[in-house]
Image 1 (spheres, rainbow, N blue to C red):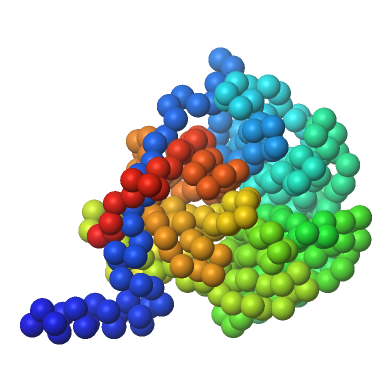
Image 2 (cartoon, rainbow, N blue to C red; image 1 turned 45 degrees about the vertical axis):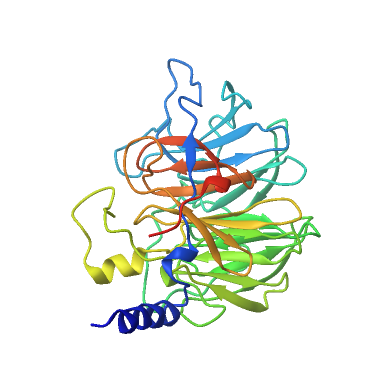
Length: 362
């Protein structure tokens, strides 16, 4: 094949998949701060699905640690606070009624701490002192024949005020609350700042405004809501009323050395379905905001403009420092400082990015 024909083919493929050629997604050099979290001798992290940072640079780590009960269906939620230097400060909510199976943690503009527990179907708001001030959802009662939710076809209709394996929470500029819900339901639930129900939107599907596992949610400075529609391999953007604005798809070509954290190489079809599928998203503060997103395979973090252009990538799957095992949540207090919570490696990494030294992509 002539060189000109090859170049034309590559450009056609890039456009067909909605992504500029690979050179437009350079690798961002970065470092991982070694031994950042200082845990007491008798405290251990389990799978870490959540990490958040407040205005004082304190870290809140939501871990599936402190497990009790049987191997399957154990109670696995523990909320820990660390100082800016990574030193352990306290555990919040020990033996809390809602603790069942940790999913994510967020901090709002007033430093309130919000936890989303997938196992109890509850979202809990703590004040900065660590006291419960607001509760959403209700877990199944122990006195009933309670069991885990099952997925059925067609899906059960969502119920106002009730959650089925919720995943995340965010807020708009007016303080309205948006909860992504989640694994069984496929919707976004909206409450006002007082905790009163407003509306919901979304159902299971592939069309704009429909979801397949809305797994993470974030808001920009204008109050637009970004939903990581993981099963549909896209990020959908809405205004605060739930009006669909646009979708973002991440299509950076797979690196030749890509491999999963566990198991053999996926088939080309499975690899394409996972590449760029958003597990976790966060949006940086400041006058120029960036969107960060992570996938499970090939295990990268993507830096995007809010209109969806990929401006850099970093990382890969693995067990070493600077490698990732299923990033489940990202905290991005600034453009070049990230905290990533990993399920499979049982840890939080603090990443310092050096985009001025970025290398051209493959």
